[in-house]
Image (cartoon, rainbow, N blue to C red):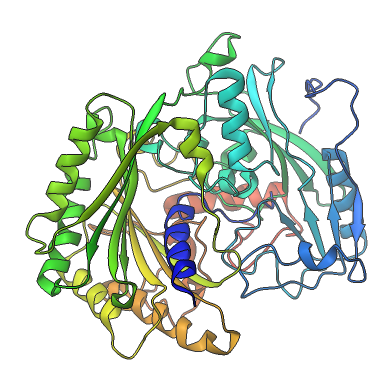
Length: 537
């Protein structure tokens, strides 16, 4: 693999980690008419039914992790909620397994599964606009994060605290919780979710469109709650979200969502493997954990700093810290202090670059490579404090193993906490509300013949980090479960999860029974399902 492509993948996957969500597979009680982006205009495209003989088919079924390429009977490209409802109804009547794609960044085969016979592609549903009837911003599920940021900011000077990969689709990103560089300041994306529009299938097999809001008197409120971290592909097909921050009032759109900083200080810091021994590696990891634990409180100057420490395999050459400091004249000082704390006792000198840029430029910059042409396996976890000494030793072992030469293997430690942790665990479906670090494990490769070797490496790495709790991040003093937008079917496999704790407790904690009740009401026939889907209660 060419060196520049390897570097692109390492950086892209580190950045995309904060944005990638389970692909959108996501109901509307009779509601007031929604203000359309352009009055009287028809849907931008669709419905289009694309089969295997259509030249468009090959592209439509190769939009995710290259380990999985689907072979559905047809792909329905849709441009409106009614087109989605019609497609779902047709699939149910034909007895077809249905899956839905928004941005295509799912790490597992939830869409590209051999049993899926119809894929509903939301490429035509990309609207982002202010809806005066709900005093909220509407975002269609096929819109990419980049377009959401661009339109919200240029139109009204506001944003959502979502991920830093602009090509990710809003559909799955939001349903799984959604976090990014501004989350330590403004919370998760779902903390600003006011309403959701979903196409569901009732007990009679009839597809219906339902709108559910966070209003306490809304009879559909539990469907809204299920989409505040319950993950995609569980309850129906999300077609539209509405966003308004809690407590925001009035009809001035510029006051209804967070305002991003005018500029950010972006940075890249690299500590070379050369000259770094196990003691220095342990100090770097421990220093990062100590900083995140010490600065977990919301409202502090340090809450403006977001960083991802990418611990790479030795053949990659360096460990890399990337991130940003949001606004403020003291950004350089905060970064200086951060880098000094992380590097103390490491034993090698870091190489650092930084640049002050307009916020929108950084939000849209992204990468030329978002990892979608690679074969990938990922895993995840949350930490309530830094990794233990034993966990750090396990990471060092697997990142330096001489019997595994792939440079594209890593563990990324991402800053978390701040405003995220001001929300009670049961207020949304996102249960992890006292973590300070989010973990992202990655193996990437190109040759299908090497699947077994690379899968074995990352599975053994993960198992050994959590050896004290049955090979998985069982919530406790240090660990706090995993993140459904980085799905990992191994957590449901007793060969790799020997903890006795079910996979759903790792993702949803005590919120799972409530999700099951929502599933039983809104998808009683289990039409929308995948390898980690919520089971009806």
